[in-house]
Image (cartoon, rainbow, N blue to C red; front, side):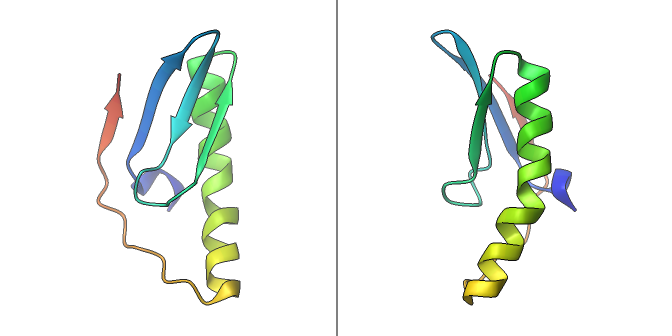
Length: 68
């Protein structure tokens, strides 16, 4: 499920940012693009679970990937 969401990766000053636009606030950063990607993929299920526990509706993934 985690990688079904669109993941945007981009360079910002001295680190890489990975964010999931469909999941407001679901983002992370790391020293490398690969590490940022892996961290956000690991974060998605925790984010979705927290939303469900809070009663927040989780959008269905659109399944697009963007690398900038």
